[in-house]
Image (cartoon, rainbow, N blue to C red; front, side, top):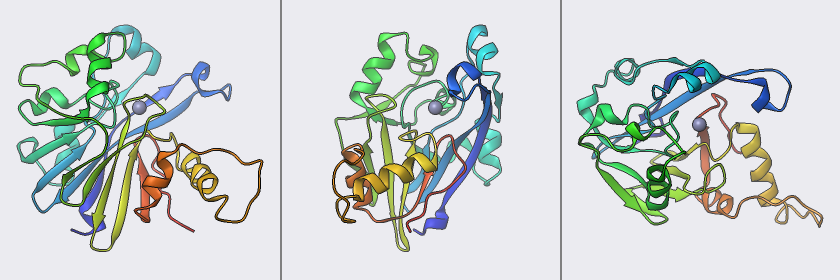
Length: 231
Ligand SMILES: [Zn+2]
């Protein structure tokens, strides 16, 4: 497959209130999923914003694109999805999972345990009729050339995907970083010694080196439409 066989889906937007942005102003954020047209079938990373309780709806004021509608924009139906991967199980990433009942969902075992324990996500998005999980304990190659890499930080069970294509690798980072610029800062931090910089230096998460070892041609995110490319 080629890097152009990975397509972004806009699954909605929400307004992060000023209390959470640290800037004193609210911020509108996108919610993006990614469709991977692998030779062995369609793989979908993240399924959109779940319907919350009234309190969550009022707090984040989400506008949704329903998953079937988002998939239709790239000519795909729900029944064509072979495999779902969630970067983590917060409600803004697994909202469409129940629509894909019977389709395996790849997540980290610890992430599912935390989500089932309560007070973490909307439980109806995790345990629903026909829910089926392929649970991982760390890294795995789930299809030839599609690697799941644990990227703890935002939550401890967070994971990202790396897709090795004929024309280069693409990292589907999910929410490993909120923005492409945050990734960029960590990528430079991880390379600082190699660039000849001495201490003191910022520290990057240990897994940055693992992701960068795939020499990604681009890196894409769950909440930022900006794309990172190497220098
Ligand atoms: Zn999120």
